[in-house]
Amino acid sequence: MKKSLILFLAACLILLTGCVKESPEPLFTPPTVAPEDREVVRSADVDGIFYTLYNDYTCHITMADSEVYNASSLALPDKMGEYTVVAIEDGVFQNASFTSVVLPRGLKHLGARAFEHSQLTGIALPASLCSMGEEAFANCVRLGEVTLPAGIGTVPVGAFYSCRSLKKVVLEEGIHTVDDEAFGDLPALEEISLPQSLCHVGDFAFWRCNNTALQFTLPQGIKTVGTAAFRETAWLESLTEEWVIAGQGVLLRYNGNDPAPVIPAEVRFLSSAFDGKDVETLTLPLTLEEASEGALEQSGVKAVHYEGSVPSLTALKK
Image (tube, rainbow, N blue to C red; front, side):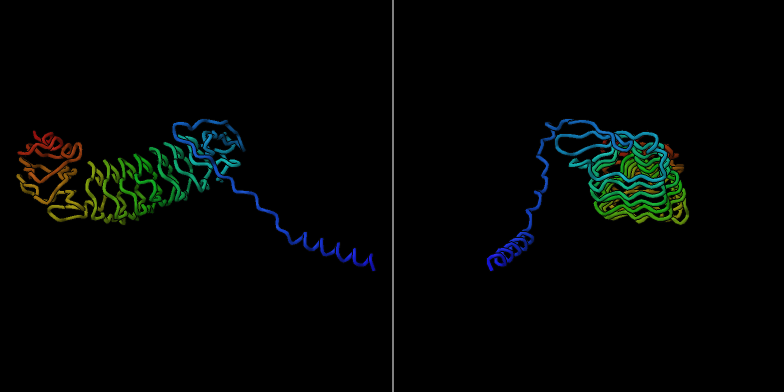
């Protein structure tokens, strides 16, 4: 009887032990490090990709070897141990042969020329992305479409310049600036979605996007459009109004034949609206606030009449 009781109690103990859950490992919380105190901890080389690790438990991808460059595809890790991958530095994957890449989900910065001249056919940019360097994807001649996340704010200079197979571009709501030549020389571009948040378009931003299927719907909030931003686009050529005015009073094009035109008072910003036009005297209204640099360089305007004092406008007087 005593033996049976001992066996029964032992069985109960085993069952109770199995029901007790072990406490989970506490989640690792990186320390808070002020920007001025951020320091390099060490470098690492894993599978041909080189990383720099920092004391705030972030890391940057800084270099890759030839085997990585020549692979058919690439998947980049979200973390190196407890270090979150937040940046790909300048030129890291320039001229790479791979056609697809999976970017880290916590990526915040993509360096200048990071994928320039690569063979990418597509790219999914993570929502975490905050900034891109100039010409990040320039001359990616096989790239077919791209969606740019809101967090970048600005599409940088030459970001997708001469991506000659690019057919579709989506700019998410929150992007406010398309910088110089960002989408210049894209003959295959058929569709682009511009957000209502867009305010500024740089020089030559969409130059030579001349696919006849491409239409631009400029948001009402547009305030400035740089010189030649839409030069050599079928869309601009198709606009027939005498004064083509967009957004917050941006003069994009003049289609009239008056040798002495007077810009309407509603115009606040003068872009290169008089390209190729022979004009004896152009009168600028006092309500005009600014002009793009070189706004009249490709025009036949012989003289400018302006009685105001805005520097970018007095510079136009001949």
